[in-house]
Length: 90
Image (cartoon, rainbow, N blue to C red):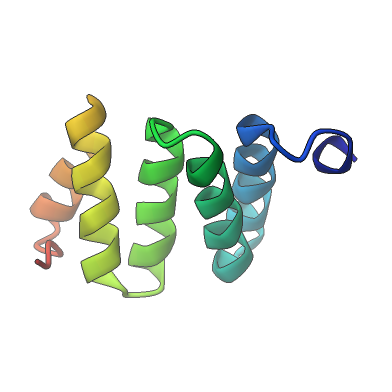
């Protein structure tokens, strides 16, 4: 409902993406995190959560790209995690 009322609200897409992520529907989660990023290109949490969803799909290259972007924006936890697990791909 929130997205229909305000389709330019990044938080609504991010929140729905978290729900899909928790349900294990990473394709839909990625789509919503992507939309949140399109609306707000500085949404660190959307980048980190999309990185996590990509990692769960074993798409480590895209996970690394998103984690690096989140790190550029100020939160390097996702990148650190990928590094610890030796999952960083360039």
